[in-house]
Image (cartoon, one colour):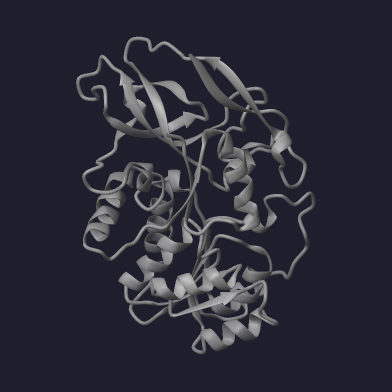
Length: 332
């Protein structure tokens, strides 16, 4: 039986293309003692994967050329000698982009499909949701009545950040790249949303949307949007740097405004973070996100592409703003 596999064919310079991916047919692996044979159901594509396509030093090792790309996957157990994970169990883990894979049972978590759709454990109730949870609540710490700005607000992390800020009683402003996404954010409960691609002046748009200044900024994007936000920071503002997608494909890092004076004058706190910093607290975050979801306070949003062969296309679409919410590929 063929086992379709997508490997990194070459390292990109600038924006990646389909040429960086190669579809191969490999043998279905045989599980060893303590391992499970898994059939892939859903594959997560995420912006951070662009960094792993490069050899540059980062917080996680790069993908190896000629080897399968790995990431978040929801899979079904099809062969097992582990009583806790019998055949038919649905699990989530960091797995290769292939139709069938093997993994140690201890590296997987069982998906409670009675509580939410399985794909949600790659988004709202998975890594992006946890990223939003810890970045907003631990670093930004929004208070009732404060103003929170979220860049990349219609993305997998941003949609959760905005909803969490509303749960905490804050006023929420999001930036996004289309009128459709702006309308979606407002329907989701954002107080204001700005189309950064069409607004004549981000500074004026932010001043109008946040007349009393900005207390918290959750930064997924960087670049010109962040430059504009820094002009409106309130005293003791808190800034969480989650991503800088505007620069992920840059061949040269642009020189922008120097933010230090603005941060100094506002006594603002600026902190970058990686969700794995909070690994020991993931059960806490997942339990709280699940509770809010079951209570109806959190909604999941997904852009689902169908077909294993379409995984690279879905990944490349992230950098064109084609997804609203979590980008996922449904394999079967």
